[in-house]
Image (tube, rainbow, N blue to C red; front, side, top):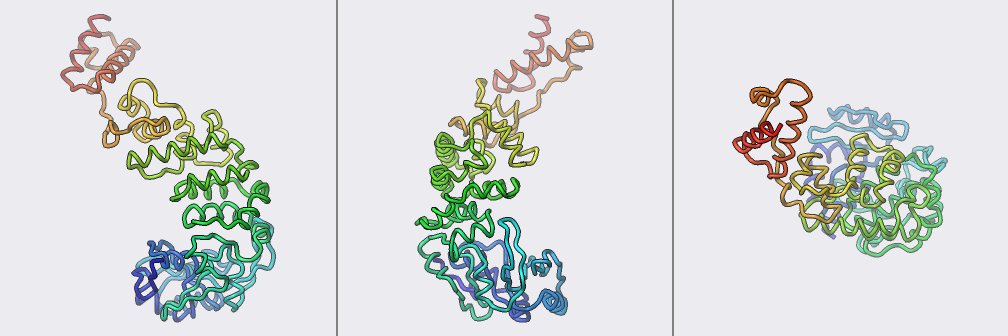
Length: 386
């Protein structure tokens, strides 16, 4: 592990942040501590405090910062600091859970707060001033071992929040080396619980998982254990094979993993429309998902990029295992000819102009987008034949 501490991590060693944390009697918690210990960049900073949300609001204000009650029902206040927001949450314990939502009560017991979190590696706390680490459930050992392990009984934790099934695999794809067998068995046993979740939550979790460093082997593990069967049955062993080939193509081309492109690889082409609708993807992502499966066409990469746009062409070529070199840094040109130029050549205004323009464009594409002079020659030939 990277072994950074709040004193050496640039995101944590900020006078205003440390002073605020001290006023709030707070500790860093969760992902920030986990990623700091792994020597990874930290995106979101979360503080946990035994103080009530009302006290947090007044102390943030007294410190000269703006408190925003972003999730006050669950005890979360966002403190707007000059170099970025910080989430401050009062220590909590679960009163009741139904697999989708939790009713919480506030507490001043750090261990109770840790006990309601999902995995041991996400329940680590660090003192902002001294750097002392607090680990109530063996999270440090699990982090060292690359083991994503539920806190307490995995079946009970999944019953509290069904999304934890997908989170188990997403965190395993990011941080895991050895899979926790008890966690895996519980996820497989309760996979049908995913049906109770909103499709948006499932999509958000899946799209994050698909770009994680070990996404391919983890998706294979999920298919093998029937995790998708209840909610996206279209994802099967063939999909894993296509995803494997796509990941190889992305790596060979030096392209970053892309979640929508990878999702497209996971399903047969004819399923893309249904899956996009079921997961309530945005219209843009839905269209892209459907288009990605349409194959590389037979006119060549540049012609494809000209007709469907570079992003869609890259999706289709990579999914087909074909090279994208010809279009990687290429901007499709505009046809350097207008209908007016055909009218000047004696073609009467009307549908005939559009028909001939299409013919000229097709030849221009076939000749790999030659310059304006050559386009003029093509136009002369097409007009004389007409």
